[in-house]
Image 1 (cartoon, rainbow, N blue to C red):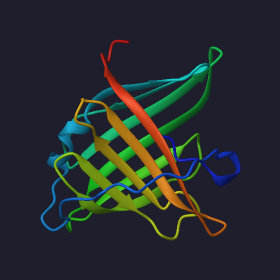
Image 2 (image 1 turned 90 degrees about the vertical axis):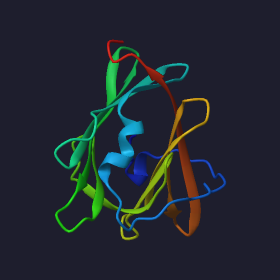
Image 3 (image 1 turned 180 degrees about the vertical axis):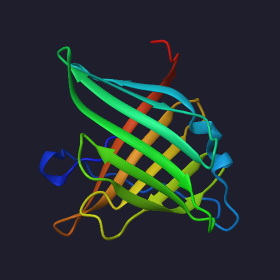
Length: 160
């Protein structure tokens, strides 16, 4: 999922997710449902996102958006379980510096990471939908207004 700097962000307002789960005693193994390859296709853009299975106290991910045959955005992502038990989502979009988001909620099909000091987004959410698709979402406040961007994705073969 791409974490956009505010200068390149096109956003739409949307309702917030309902959250479930707790952080206490959370383990990165609970995010195994995120592993694999995911795709989102628009009229002129295709975004693919791939996550490795949990291992070694982390998950590694990469995202790429192609438009008109050229890579226009990319992101390196990590989810790390630190020695003290805290879990962080670390995003590095299109060569920018890394931004860390701390786990705030985890459930069997949804995870929420937050960084209230980041310009946008302040929240990163992944939700496994009942039909097997994945909804990535970023949320936050820009110039005093709540903003949300959704990234609906379907599971694909990692060979595609």
